[in-house]
Image (tube, rainbow, N blue to C red; front, side, top):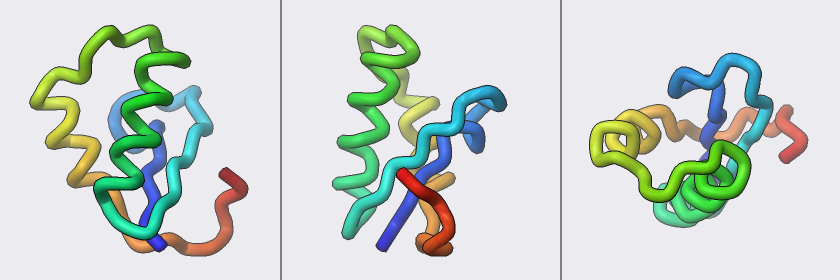
Length: 64
C-alpha cells in the first residue's frame, strides 16, 4: 500500500492522506482532494512532481 500526506507538500494544516495500491491511484485521490479541498483548478507540473516524490510505502498508522 502506498500513501501521500498533503502536509508533506507545503500544506502543514492539512491532515489529508491518500492511500492506494500504487502511485497512480494515490495521485488520482490526491488530485481530487486538491481540486475540492484546496480549490485548485489544475495541478501545476512542479507540484505534481513534488507530490509524486512524497508518496511512500504506507506505515499502516494513518486513518484516511
